[in-house]
Amino acid sequence: MTPSLQRDITQGSLARNIWHLAWPMTISQLFFMLPSVYDAIWLGQLGPGAQAAAGLTMSVRYTMISVLMALSIGGGAVVSRYVGAKDQDKANLATLQAVVLMIAASGTLGVIGLIFAQPLLTLAGADADTLPLAVRYARIIFAGLIAMEMVPSVGSVINATGAPQVMLGMTLLSTGSLLVAEPLLVRWLGLEGAALALIGSNTAGMLWGLAFLAAGRAPVRLDLRNLRLDFPMMRRILRVTLPAVLQRGTPNLAMSLLTRLVSSYGAPTLAAWVIVRRVADFALIPSMGLSRAAPAMVGQNLGAAQPDRAARSVGLIARAVTLAEGGVLSLLVLFAPQVMALFSRDPRTAAIGVHVIRVLSVGYLALTLNYLFDVAQAGAGDTLSPMVINLVALWIIQVPLALLLSRPLGLRADGIWLALVLSWILQAALMGLRFRQGRWKLKQV
Image (cartoon, rainbow, N blue to C red):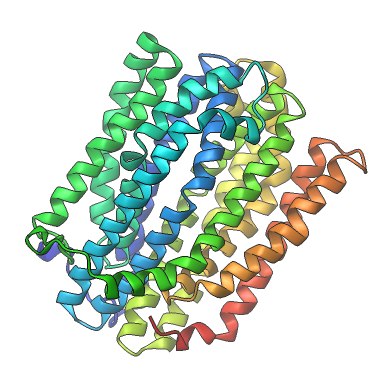
């Protein structure tokens, strides 16, 4: 195990321990999201149709990979408990079983997406002009889904051990490969080149990360000599994972339905929405990096029988998230026209995007706090409470309100943006209230 990766976050200064986790996670998140922004710039060179095709594909993909997001939560929660309890053998075993489950799930989903790309994209709202482009792009993405998903999934599990440098290495290699490959492949192969660049760059990061773990250079190890299916350990992981499938799946499914609704207002509106989502993902990097320290702080401190210390760490992260993200979103609102000009040469698309950024900015701040309390409770193994809150906020508030405001009340796409803001604020309030109740402190995994 590399000494620089060893740190006991169950004792000492909370601020220093959070910083030890947060800075590599923030940089890792930066390099993880940079390919999305970089990809959007190159897709913009191919026109609004290419942007829309990629956006629809990613909408379908995000809905399908909810299983993998949930597995990373379940695996991370179980592994972090064993690390906090100083049980190295069980931590290694849990990591290996989590990786096996992730490979099986991503491979199965990739085959499904490859075979059913056309009906899935039609269901997502692809029109006659966009569908052929989207199918070409989607089939490549789903063929390489294992590589696309193993970097964030495995990285999230290792983050929970308190060693975010592993995911940082994976994302640095992936991003560096993409920066070189995408310009060459887009100029050579067009839309297909953009998809191949994403797959190839993530393959490089995945192979490096798995080799690093197999070599025993992280706090947990992939011991391939003892490769076997351990069903009791898998059941522990799946017990946390199953509620998280709905917890992660409901937002992804809701966003797919909203993307379909947005697509009904034309390609420029859909392209603007796709761009804004990518820009927002990039703008939320500081808060996401800080928030991703929470599962490790919560899980390991619960494993060390220190629930109050776990709660104090989340409160400290919440204050830092509010300050950091408030500043970033203010700058994004101020420079929205210049930002949109980077991604689209179409004046109508750019104008719609500027408007969407300014309307959604307050909602994005609430979304960051919701995410923090969500992953903090997931780090404790409590995925049931966030699941229920997500179901209420999305299916009772967000989706019905978007339909009502956009169509019967005649606000069109503005009704969708307003529904998002209101539901995100409500969701953050409910998640924060649930966290303050403290029942997650009693969760057993």
